[in-house]
Amino acid sequence: MKEISTLRNRIRKYIDMADEKTLKIVYAMLEAEQEADWWDNLPPGVQRSIDKALEESRKGKGIPHEEVVKKYRKWFTR
Image (cartoon, rainbow, N blue to C red; front, side, top):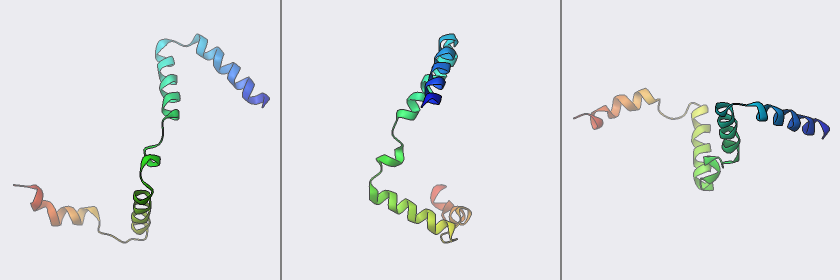
């Protein structure tokens, strides 16, 4: 616990000496840490579907992107 207190005090000293640019960077990092991860906002069913698709991809199932592009290119060109 003492280590955390020491770390906080050292950071405060840096913050007190920091220029505006550095303060904005540190603030943005702290804000980003507080924001919820987009994954957590997905419905559980969607999370499961994505996990399943990733697992299938790791096992070599599915169609490589290049093959899909070749097959369906005509749909996207006029």
